[in-house]
Length: 114
Length: 115
Image 1 (cartoon, rainbow over the protein chains, first blue to last red):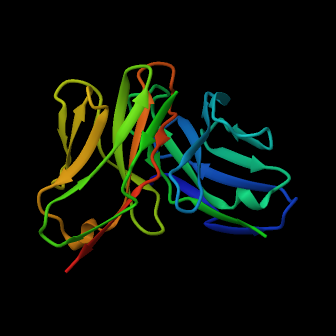
Image 2 (cartoon, rainbow over the protein chains, first blue to last red):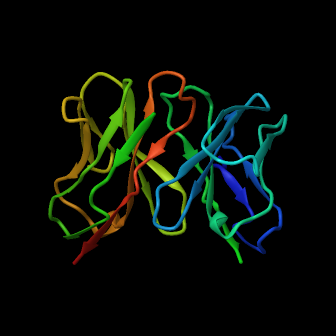
C-alpha cells in the first residue's frame, strides 16, 4: 500500500521563477494539506484541499497556490520565488478533513532558491 | 490561534537512559495534541496523540506523553532509549473545532542517543 508520494525529491530554482510540486495521497485518502519546513524549524501549514477546493489557509501570500484533482492528487505552485522560499515542502493526507485525525506525511520536496 | 513551545532544541542522552522532551502549548480553545518524529531525509511520522479520555497516551515503541491541562503541557517520555530513537521530535496542536487538518508545530527537539 503506497503511502504519500511527492515529486520531485529535490529542486533548484532561481529567484523570480515559478515552481510546481506534486503530491499523491495515500490510498483511500481524499484530503491533502501542504506544509513548509524551513531549515531548523517546525512545519508551517500552507493550505488544505478537500473536494477540489481550498478549505483552510495559513499565513502565506497569494504567491502560494494549489490545486486538487479528481483523483485527489494535488499540486503546490509558488510564483515569483524568493530566497526565503527555500525549504522542505511536505504534503500530508488524511481520509477526513476534520481535526482529530493523524496526518500521513510524504518525504517532502527540498526546494532551493538561488 | 494556537502556539507550541519546545524549549529544548537538542537533548543528548546515553543509550538505556530515560529521557523527557518538553512541550508546552497555548490556546484559547480546547485542543488535540500530537507528537511526530522525523528521521533524516524523511517526512514526519505520528508517534502518539491525545484526543480525549485518559491523559496518559502511549506509543507502540515505548514512548508515552501526558496531557496536563493546568500546566498546558504534553511532555514526551521514554524510560529507556535506544540508538534507533535518534531523530527530531515535533510537538503539534490543533483546535477541537474549525481547524481542519491545520496543525501548529513547535520548532522541534533533536534527540541524540549515544553509546
